[in-house]
Length: 264
Image (cartoon, rainbow, N blue to C red):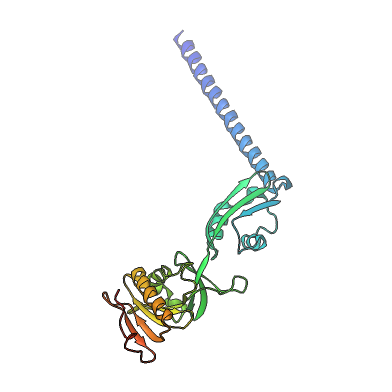
């Protein structure tokens, strides 16, 4: 009787194991079929013309044309929208010298939305070649005829490899450039040891501003400069680097009334 009971227990245990294995097999088969079907469907979607990128909306571009951006990103061939690697496109987009910030996103089934913020040149840096400089002090591209070159010129570095050393001075020089000074400044010379020297637009007058308190020195220069022009006094140079005075070098000997130094 005991042997029959043990045999029955073993059969029940074997049946339970087989039952569990059957369910495991069926579950594994279902998962495999699900993954296979999903993969087939995904592959079909990646090649489907329904998701072809037929519309690309670009906002924020002024200097760059839509055609330029499409060719730069390789989107002129209308690829499948699902196949696009947005991280890669974003990295390429933000590596463009004219693009300061950007965002990119899909709009299913066939639209790609690109929003950019372009760099706006405020000056031109001469360093062997001529480069645009934006308001952040970023030297970002060589000049081209479409944008033009009607900007104050920064001089100092003799070749592009020297630009990095001049970046702090470039940012300091940009504090002098504004709509109010556009008619005043022709050039700003950068010197790593002596600082900034402003060259006026109308009479090419060199004005030494140095390395410190640049905005304050500019205001003091403007006061004396307008005074000298009003009096029609011709000068050779102006030095604003002293804390308590401005030194004016006259081109021609002035009269006793005009020969004086303007205190700051």
